[in-house]
Image 1 (cartoon, chains in turn red, brown):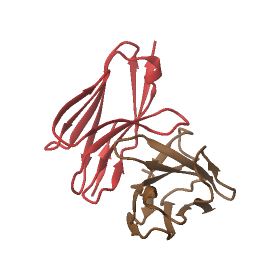
Image 2: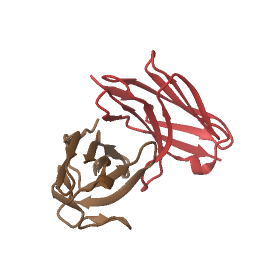
Image 3: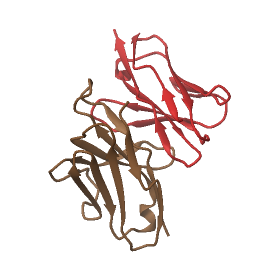
Length: 109
Length: 118
């Protein structure tokens, strides 16, 4: 079957670094997305990985290992505004999105 | 976990025709469903909020006469793209809010429907 797992909730300190993991099992693979969603708002696109490796974009980086079915989102220099839910989603061979349940990230001063 | 399905997953239609997309919550009752449109590698754009038994609330810039939304039951919302044109080609994603979930703002997303208008 198709499945995506990510932690339900994480807590980190302002200024620190946090890594949010995502493991997946899908029928075919056409890339992995990370989205940020603040309460009451639409998800914001953060990254898209289709090849193995690390992609860095400012304070956020995303890593993918297709052989391991694993990705992580790395957030550096955490700010209070980074408190949000982070959604991992993969696109299968039919270009359908399979969504993780989201990781609620709580940033403490 | 909560499951949201969409049908069809992919549709190709001729310009000028209407297309209906269904969004269903399979194991929970959703009083509120959301319809999004996604462009490649872009953020999801909220089109409208659908509330069971009442009219949908459309976001600014979304034509309510073109994108008809009906939320007839607690498990089904439909989006009808009327008189579709090539510029309506996109990936449409719905989500549903489970009122009994621990987090009031938790949304469960559907797999998306890829619409291609020729």
